[in-house]
Length: 477
Image (cartoon, rainbow, N blue to C red):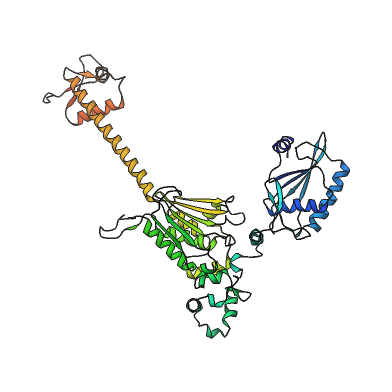
């Protein structure tokens, strides 16, 4: 870090990744700062700087003491341990120690009292909400929402006949032939946890999943215009049922609210969807399988006159971004659900859904909204592309017509000025009030020659190469 970079950071003040402290002597306080950085996005602790950005400085003895304290705290007061990196900056007011903490790969990090700290703006806070704790454990792979048992349920909440049909189709054997009790078999398939149906079991084979998890549905609305606050709507439905039923009903809602176009089909055919159906198959499956089920909120399917939006609770997991998923990178948020979805939905589990959708329909925008904790897919409808193409075609046709009319008018004016005798190109241009010989004039003369309306002659000047043009003898104006 250069001196100017250091000054710029100090002048900018504290934020989520830069914290100022005069000094540290308390191990618990230092541990909380390190944990907050590691549990969020990482950051740097500037020791020897007051909250207002003024340099208080450290002595060489203070730096040695702080290094020892930091080593002890990072290894003994943080679970799992951290490995911060230190740098010392020399200022005229004394040394400043910079402690750099990377975002952790083993979240959540806790102190000796089992408290979890995260950054909240320029400050830190203790995590107490159950859902937020679960998401931190989820990021480190310690817990998955789809494997959490659903309270107040039993095997009676599952449609066993549907499960049996699935089992026979997938494994080519009956339930009885396994010789296992039903609860044990479903536990082995990660559909039951601690004797209760987990979220995967309920969403895939529940008799009515929303009776136990009412927020896990799809809210679908079709609007006549382009804004969500429109005072009216064309169609609205709360889609409920198992994951397969949510997929089928979601696709049906899209198909009945989008236009069908003929393309190259016969006149009597029903036509195909304005956006290829495969696109929505991939995007709906992606939303259902990869949404964050720790967030108690529905998937939203919104159809506007110019676009379709599919909004899933939860931003992209871990460090994934939209460019990475466009190229097929993936990170399983719900591994148990995904393992069964492979056999129940058009899901391949290879991270190829988004690339296939964008390849079939490039006009797709992906928005990873980390502040709003949601992932949004926006699909541009064909109606907008049609308008653009038609407007462009109309503009081109109008320009072509105007150009043609202008050329025909120029040709007739050339014929008119040649009625009084032979003229050179420059004389024709002058007679027409044009600034010199232009490409349009040359084109007009060549066209009139090709049509046999004018001919080229030479003036009565010896050795002159000056060409002149006149009306043909048999041509009448």
